[in-house]
Image (cartoon, rainbow, N blue to C red; front, top):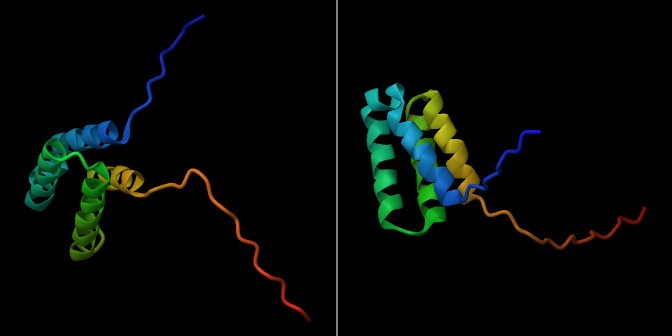
Amino acid sequence: MAKTKTRTFYPNERLSAQLVLAKRAAEIRNDIVLAKLVARARQRLNHSGDIVVIAHQIAVDLGYYLVCHQYEMPRAAYDLLAIAYEVSVDVPEAATIIELPQRKN
């Protein structure tokens, strides 16, 4: 029976790996704006430790790029946007459900 090792990726590792993949994508290298965006994000990630802020800024920059380019963007940029959004969105571990009062007829 084959055994596999499972490895959990931390958010900073996932974002870093996705930035490397995006940098290597030909369609991003050919687009000057996206190439600068990815380079700036990698530089911020290497110099700063606040992964949530960096991921949020990547999502904002790519959203602005989408609006300016009639919602057309290379696949690698969409993948980067998905990872950045996933990292920047804070998922609560515990939540309280508040029951709304019922309307009386």
